[in-house]
Image 1 (cartoon, rainbow, N blue to C red):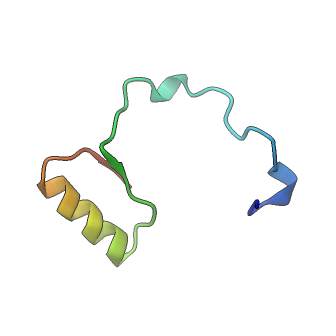
Image 2: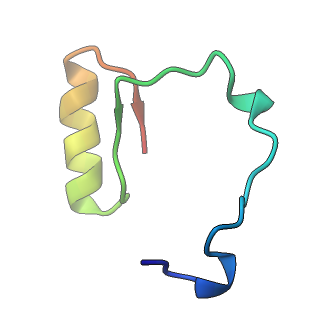
Length: 51
């Protein structure tokens, strides 16, 4: 399943070298009230979070 069918099977990003050295303990999808609450709770435990 693809949200944007014209990109199915194609790489949107070919160079991810800028992401080297970036490690997260959790990735939260969504920055609404639920996502931010979840991210805040995880961050309080000392985890590195990407929202």
